[in-house]
Length: 248
Image (cartoon, rainbow, N blue to C red; front, side, top):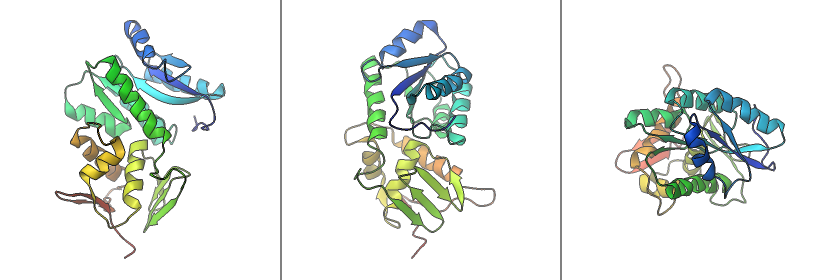
């Protein structure tokens, strides 16, 4: 499976392991996607995504219903994100899990948002559209200016949607990539947590503060090796984050 070109028609991929939930979930996408494909397991979801690409379309959104086990969800995400497939496709995971650490692990695996149930359909649709707006606007405040940023051994290429750290390609999720771009534009400058969150999620969108920490942690983990922790993303306690200015 490879990343599909943007000019292909977009299809929403819903993965739901419950007949009673299938139609409910599909209705969430009717206004935004002309076609919705359904898979009944994470394994089937991978094959459906391949068939979508083979049919001249592309996966434009992935939603996991709460009926799919968390292990299957995390395994699917690790596969499509870790091997560089579907790196920019927004993924929303619905869950009835009450353990915050489990939700953190799902985010670390590559989900863009974990939505706790029960949740009104209108709010779910709003969150889907927020993720779509984020993905469609790309990672630029100025969408007309693709760029390549280099800070020491860190390379962030917005046109290729590629991150390289110490010569190795890093499979960043769409949100992780947007975080890096916002930080790497001004190496050494501290970007406050509130400023960064507003830039990522919008002025009035309510997101738990812990979500940002989870994504920062995920980036550091991906950029670390055994006995060589990532130090390029620095935390300034009580303020925010910055990319270490290795060139100064």
